[in-house]
Amino acid sequence: MTRLEKNSGPARRGFAAMDATRQREIASLGGRAAHQSGNAHRFTSEEAREAGRKGGQVSRGGRAARRTGE
Image (cartoon, rainbow, N blue to C red; front, side):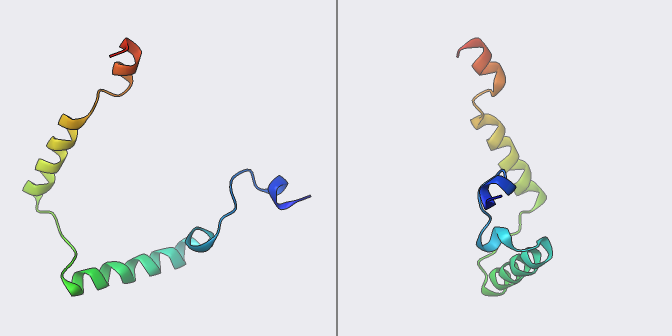
């Protein structure tokens, strides 16, 4: 049995091949580094609300638009 027959999806390499615990450790280090360097941004509840409102306005309608052919 070949590797392709064993796995139905594409080969997992690099970060995707690591176990979930190791992925979380690496991601956590990146987040800490971003905060320490001042490049990270934390949304206030007002900023998050505004971002969500904008996202809803940009929406093209999803399934309803595809169904009606708009």
